[in-house]
Length: 435
Image (cartoon, rainbow, N blue to C red; front, top):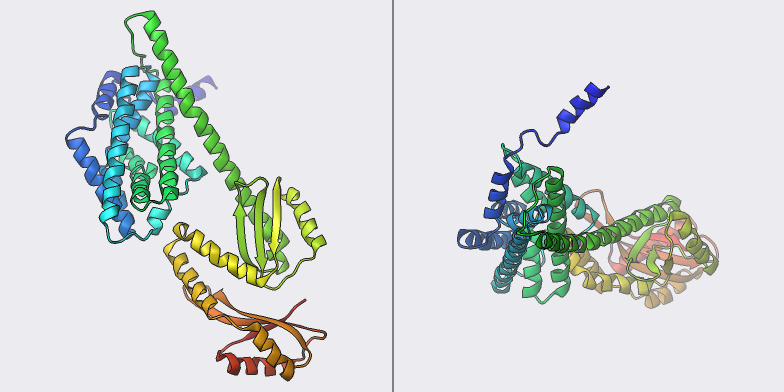
């Protein structure tokens, strides 16, 4: 058994193939500076990444990430923390600050003079960090730190530069400055900060694991002072990161439980949801739902709110929108408010919804005419609805929901459909009776 453990340890031993520690530290120190060529490379990489985000080109963005020297000072900060080298840490943070400011200025100037200011999907995806971004930054940072300490560097470093994606959020923040969109700026800087902090922490852990020698000071009191300052900085880095990770994890968990709730309580029962909005940051959290034809009584809504606890949706309130006019208004407001957070395809679909909404039907006028032709009809509601036909094409069909004392027979339904086709100049109409 001991021999098996030794063999297993030999497979995972990071000391095998390790570069001389002094040489690694020398290389790390040399790569933290942003003067001369490094500054020019950074500025050009920022422009390339901004163009990629502007034209929604993933290939161009990847190219910019490969030539960017931004990883240097972040890794330097991790080594500074791990070796208690206060001077290295200070220089690394100073150069990272310079690089960040230069990147923001260059990207803001580009987007300010660019004639194309519409937010593209590649740009929008950098404004809403989630829990997976933390995992990518942390484990990508570990790969990068391990690769730097090897004799044979291999292929990991370019992959780390792509995976951790430091350039795109900086360019997106510049876009936010150029367009005076602080929501874009703060969201992108939040993602950038997450990447920097977790790459730094993972580098620190590898440095400690490989037992890099700590920086020797002139005297013991100075050494203790430096250790105290660096330990304090480490805590300042780690605690907010843990808090951000926790918040992102809770939000992801909430979304997953909400999906289970809507699936079990509505979708599996054949109840179609046409409107859904959540407010995770409210207290209590808010879930708003609207439905195609289903109407809920007060007691049913109360029971649904009680059932939220069964799905681990605590401190949450369910609000059901039952007024068709209100639902349409909310959807349009949501389109306007969240236009900056949707993909290009979603924008196209939602613009179609706006166009459909502009061509609304006069329910009151149609009801007056229908009562003359079909006296058993008591009330109606008609509006256009979009159906995805399992392709990229969409099908738009007017749907009539009617209320009557008795169910209409097949012949009466056919007459109503034929009349509506002529009256509304539509090729297809669907009708349903309100339950």
